[in-house]
Amino acid sequence: MESIDDLILEQINEKKLGSIFFISNFSELGSDSAIRVALHRMVKKGILIRAARGMYALPKTSQLLNTEVRPDLTTIAKAIARRDRAKIMPTGSYALHALGLSTQIPLNVVYYTDGTPRKIKIGNSTITFKKVSPKTLSYRGEISSLVILAMKEIGKDKLTISEEERILVLLKKENIEDLKHDIKIAPQWIGEFMTKSFRK
Image (cartoon, rainbow, N blue to C red; front, side, top):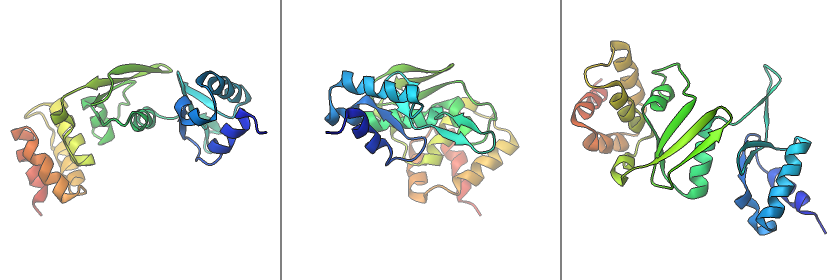
């Protein structure tokens, strides 16, 4: 009979490097306490790394630096959202970074969510999930939603010419139906600017 360690190992070996796991991923294999102990043993052996409390990952190695690469905050946030079946959306400062409008990588990121509000410590950083109304999460486009949040962060009439040009280039890559939808429900000054992306 296979041990719980072997059974867990079979499952994680099917996943790609960098994948994130929770205790609940292995609930059919045994009790939470038994799974927790087994995962702890795998961390000690170097098979897994502990990304956060109750959260583990298959480590990746940087070929350039030959060092272990831990999951980034975005990967962890998305994994938590999938587990909780929740919708999330990055707030202003992280939206700026995601769009390339800021080179500063936020150490502490905040996501809007329709799930459970919480704060999770990841090393020296934190991920905060802030509960908001469904309307805030009703944007459809991956790019256009980030643009709206980033522009809110920058403020009305404060966009630089280079920021305007980059945003319009990015919006041309958005699905046209998603873009039209998001323009309709964006703040008026943002929606009016976003319509410029339709022009040739």
